[in-house]
Length: 243
Image (cartoon, rainbow, N blue to C red; front, side):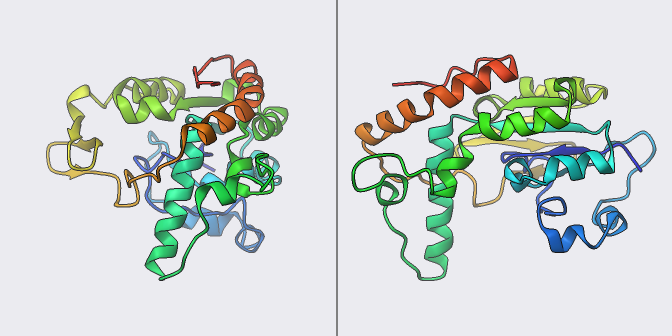
């Protein structure tokens, strides 16, 4: 089977728009590897196919399943400031609820218990505890097969991060700085080539809810020890604020 790259987390919409969920959903995994292969676009021998499903990163069975498919697979993990990611997660959920004319509890009600403690039972809170999940991947795959992308830098200035991805995948630098342009309306970079332009879909760049400095401070303090463990395992300090 072709040596696939697999994206483990969000922000990878530059690569592929639709998630497959093969390795995290039992009913799809039971359909077999040929079913998964047919979800992939046709690629030539000198091409690499990249598939992304954010849920892979937090799914207990995903690392072993991916290794069983291809032990030499290269993995892309895209992370960002865990508090920013948590707020963004809430904004997306609120937008999805609004489209169905359903209400959602406030951000504070979901992420904090009435006594003010962080609600680790809330899935969106747990997802940002990167060190817990990364350790499970590191047990199955050597560090050299996992490339961690700074999702915040990918938004601010995507070109250097894309260059690092090309180097990790062992492919020629085909993407230039001129392939990116800043879209003032959307508030982030889009991509273009000689014939077309492409921006992330309308679910990206949506307005975040107003969150008090007190709550942000509490969340940053909560995530600080997990961040430090993640930095050590990743061999890279992403500089996420702790206060």
